[in-house]
Length: 550
Image 1 (cartoon, rainbow, N blue to C red):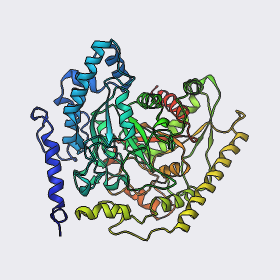
Image 2 (cartoon, rainbow, N blue to C red):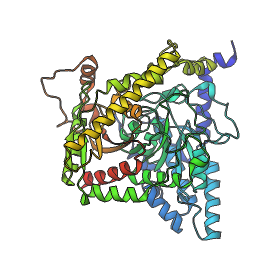
Image 3 (cartoon, helix red, strand yellow):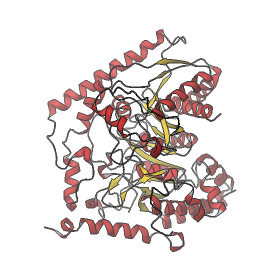
Image 4 (cartoon, helix red, strand yellow):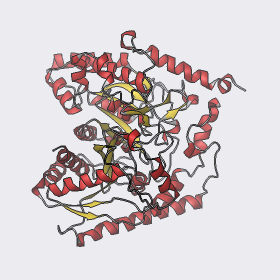
């Protein structure tokens, strides 16, 4: 047996030591922190280690950061150093980083400052903006482990994801890569390298996944904007469960070229999408990345530039200048919503009505008819790629969804059958959507629909039992944006005394709920549009979020 095979834990520990060594001594904090039961929320705790200027910079949204760096009010160096400092603190609190690139980031920031001094203009629309990346996104010369110990040290020096090259051309600064679960296929973030990443809003709860480190870093304001990926909930859930925003674009809108995955070659691939502390950050990232015309370098990207006129028209419409109609889905008939999520849905319903729009009950074809073939497609290899990655080091699996051993692979006939089932389901769903034109009163079908991210707010570890509300969007390949709505309120978010469960899963989710423990946790929903409707969905997310804040 090889040394690697017998010493996987030592390799993981060494990686953690390397990460710590890349954090300057003056940025290190006394550890361990008080236990989560004593200090659950560390989002305010982090400020004591920062200067007032660093707090100001890191708590500014991405759009305003770029405005200041592009005008010369702030130097790129000062902005980058502030975010590097706060990201270092965040990692020490919640284990949210896989890779630290502070030295190269500060060098890049200084180069951008020199460019501005010489040319009297910014390098691009993201001039000096620190952008964090999910671990699966390749950066030249930097590890991409995808949470696997066996992948450490196997980086390809010249390999870089196309989206990273595009970000650099826009003036962005790349400074960290964030934690993921093994294989990037879980609604929690745990691996044998950095351990468990908890939710910084309540460290007794999960941060979500698979872009969990990204969500946690955003919540701690160690980043204002970053990139995650999504195959079932992977960017929307960790965004929403951390009180932030996350966009799941449709397949082919942004480049996924050169991003690591153990699930490839399937009808329902991962997509890359922005996550941010404010919805305006999502818009900034989409507009900027599409400006680079990624379809010229990635054959899988559709030639579809950012449609500013569409965005503005939809923004004016949601603001009340045009009568619109929205579908509202309170439950999917398989798992009911825990009380805070149901309250969040009703808050969004009220906000839409307050804007002067019509709301109808969304009753589409059964989601199980789309989710069942979706899972067959995603796991068609029987977990073979995942377990092969584990076998490199001999480490154990941390992901229950992929089991301790590979399971039977789907054959070609089974995969074709599942693909056809998804295609047929998409047609049924579209037919239902079109049929709503008869009841909207606008002369057209609903403009978008709203549904939960999950039937629960961020749960305790091991209790993310059902993600059917998000996986169905991937099966349909619709555009979806997670937005924060409220927080759990223990005094009002209570189940009725008499509760009738729909099934065993629903009963387990009912029994999991602890309003005392979850008090203050973020509650989010998702706004869903059709395929390639990113401008429309972002406009609606902006308008609805603004109304919720009034």
